[in-house]
Image (cartoon, rainbow, N blue to C red; front, side):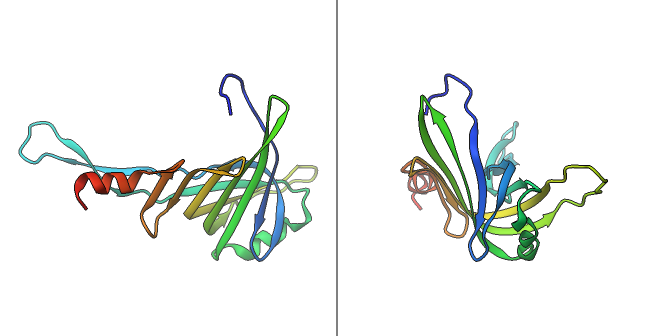
Length: 167
């Protein structure tokens, strides 16, 4: 996919294993893995940042109120689920499929005040343990916290770091 012009996702939707199609997504925040660091002096004057692990990986999504199955999402709050968000991007007339497969748990739903005549979309927050983003069927990024895997394309970043450290 080129980056020379703005692209937008179309047909953004969410399915959950065991529940099926949950609804159309109004918003989706892609999970991002971020290293945690601590300052380490070790006899030096200036501290050095050392990676000490990873922060909790979070995501969130907002479902359109127009979907009948949206209320089914309440039944999965607090449970471990496999979720898949799907969309496509128009790249010079060709539709390119983008998929985010996630394993984790939906922690909470936004509390909302509903007024007559308002459009109400539901927002949910997710803790993600495993994640794979595929573009046109090819894995582009993946991580699995339980086994310490972090990949971009075919490169396993954590395996390279471990090899460099002799682990």
